[in-house]
Amino acid sequence: MIKRERLLREFFDFVQIDSESGNERAMGEKLVETFMELGLEVTTDKAGETFGSNGFNVLARLPGTMRGEPYVLSAHMDTVKPGVGIKPFVKDGVIYSGDDTILGGDDKSGICGILEAIRSIQEERLPHRPAEIVFSIGEEGGMRGAKAFDTKQLKGKRVYVFDSSGDVGKIIIGAPGQIKIFATVIGRRAHAGLAPEEGISAIQVAAHGISMMRLLRIDEETTCNIGTIQADYATNIVPDRVNLIAEVRSRSVNKLNAQANHMRDCLQSACEKFGAKLECELRTNYVSYNLSPESAVVRDLLGAMDCIGIRGFTALGGGGSDANIYNQKGLQAVVLGTGMTKVHTTQEHISVENLVDTARLAQALLTH
Image (cartoon, rainbow, N blue to C red; front, side, top):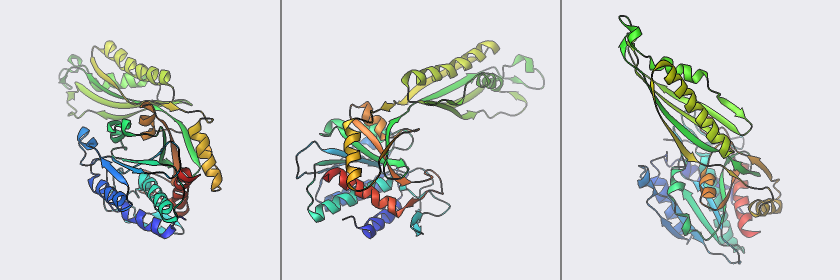
């Protein structure tokens, strides 16, 4: 049986371990210690060295008492900012933090749910399939821990990633890929008062290019956004350089590439019109995935949900997660709701009931 108070206590302990992306070591060390206390084989890697983090991915193995392919249960240990000095509290059955930090339910709700499931299985000596547990670093901002993780270590091919907003029961079977666009428009500097006609304003060129772009919601599968426009000049200088950073997301690879190329072409056209130069890189951050609602990874999950009285439903996601990377590496991965709400904001919260249901579902996956 899932022990509600123990689960809540561990969740409180874990969210108070500072683990913003790039600073996950303390959280990783705590997880290694926890797995060893549970008697599991545990290993770490050097993933942090690939992107400047002091942390590491953690892999633990739970031997099974039943035959069957191991299921891979996954969550990530890093948080977004502001995630230092979190002070959780419960009000009317819901867990909050103060107004100056996130809560960290993204994704320590997933971590704690999986750990409580393992404890419960061990205490009650429940028959269960083998499991491989992967807790990654650097998920926020590009799934960098998962990218560095060697999936050849895994015997399991089905991955259940506990890392989505929405009540327990939500199953994300498709999510977009993302291309980041890094562009620099190079014009010609001149004195804005004495000889502005001798200059080429990089800001004007960039603005013209942006004005021709299709932006934000393109269709039901595709979105794009310009997040950064950077130029810092005195008003008496015609600016000769502007930097832009943008993104495109789509569940269709063809649409993803087409929209990224469209945005680059708009900037190129503007540069040609005004005599400026464009430097532009289209960087694929991750690729989309789409699984059938009838696939075994979904069917078995729905069966586990039925066993514990949770209504399962499939959905399409709007953001990337470690599941994108696992699917890209040849595994079958879906993302599961844990009840986290208003993630990445200081209003983030999660109900105690969803936290408990996350643990119940993790247990059911391994025992049904």
